[in-house]
Every structure is written in structure tokens, then in C-alpha cells.
Length: 304
Image 1: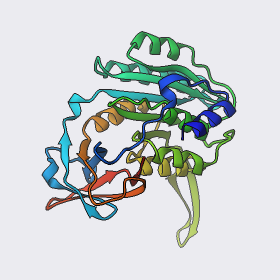
Image 2: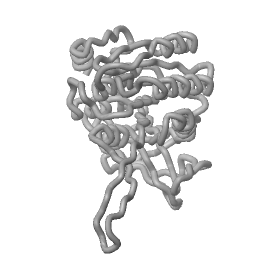
Image 3: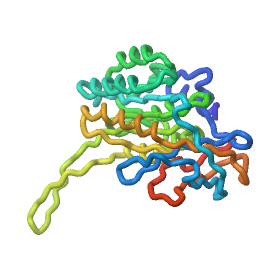
Image 4: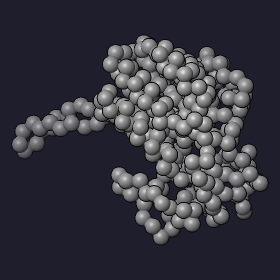
């Protein structure tokens, strides 16, 4: 895995050294597996649950689950921002302002990294507790070039450090991938081998669709989801995150804030795998017991 990350990072022109190259993997045996879980009912988050409200199966085998207090775990926030030509002007300004507001919502022990992507992917700041360093990196953002969305997502995942913190990868893009070297499957495979949760924020562009019916030609507005949207949906579903949509530049501030708040309200379940193999791919199933709600969690993990 480390060799794959290194080879791809070199191919993409990204310099990632030291601990950051040791992408966090799931481990089984005596070390517990941690699973981030989101529970919703309609558009509302379901709060107040405990470990006894969940049923977790690893490869179909029921596991004994305990819950970890989220407040006790520092956050690693990895930002991957689109800076292609379509971001020039007001959109980039809104993106920087939304990111700055996000920094104000973090706790002292949280760390942040910043990756920008256009034709090339740039690591502007590794994981750091220094808000000043991130502020300085944000000030260097400029918009030009194509969009290397998949390469950027891979690079952000590669920054997952080998510490006990929770990692949220927040990817923002306003368009389809036009310049990546990596195929979607390579990025998804990497996501399966980390415990990072990926949330994506995309611009919900609308277009008019005209239909000929009994009352003549009618027009309706529909939200378009391009190829980039399909990739982001697959990536977020695989890691237990989801895609959030901003309807305008002004919405970025609120959408970023909602993303962080939702991540903070997730449940973190922990268990020591029993009755299953200590290696290979493990399929996970997480359900509620005796309560209603939709459970969103990663689909599985690789045991090393």
C-alpha cells in the first residue's frame, strides 16, 4: 500500500514524506476496529443513541460493540479544494471565506491540511495545528487550469496520519474531472484501506429541461449530476460520508458548517473482531435495534 501511494504521488508530482505516507489502515486481532456511523431520520440527525442501540456484523458475524466519546478524539481535517479556471472570481473568494469560517469552528487539538487541485495537485500545508499556517496557505489560492479531482482525492487520502484521531476529508469541486491520471477504481481502492470519512461539497447547477405534452411545451428545472458527481457519490458511500450540495457561492459557508457539524454528531463504534479472518476484505453491516432511522457507515475494511 505504501509503495502504491509513493508511486502515485511521484507520478502526480506531489511530495508527501514522513509519517503522512503511512496511510492509516484498519487492523484486526487485539486492536479494535473503529467505525464512524451517521444516523438520520428524514432530514434530521438522530441523537442520543448508545452502543446498545446498534447491531454490527463483520462478515456476517455479530460483534460486541462499544461506543467512543467523540469529544475525546481529536479531528484531522483534510481540505481538498478545486482551484481550476471555473473557480476564478467570486466563487474562489467565497470558498476561501467559507474555509476561514470553518477554521474558527475547530477545537485546539484539531489539525488541518490543505490540498489544492487544478491541472496539477498541490500540497499547500500538511496536517498542522497551526491555524496561521492554513490561513497563509488559503491566501495563496488562485484559479486557473483544468480539474484533477480524482488525483486530489487520492492525495488527500494519502495524508491520513497514523495517529488515533478521526479523519474527515472534505473535497470541494464545482465541475467534472478533466485532467486526472488516476482511474476512479484506484482512488476507491485506496479509500477502502483507510479509516478516513470523505464528505464532498459540490455545486448544484441547474438547467432547464423542456418537454412536449398535452399542454404544449413545458419547462422544468432539474439539478444536474455529472461524472464528477457519480465519482464523489461512490467515494463518499464507500467511506460512510456523503455528498452535500451548495446552490450558490453564498451557500458555501453554511454548507461547510453543516458538514463539520454533522461529522461531529456521528457515532464512533468500536469492537475487537471475533470469529472472522484476521486478514483481507471485511464486509460491514450496521443496523439499529428497535429504533427507526437510516444508518450510514463505511461498507467494509481491509484487515492487515
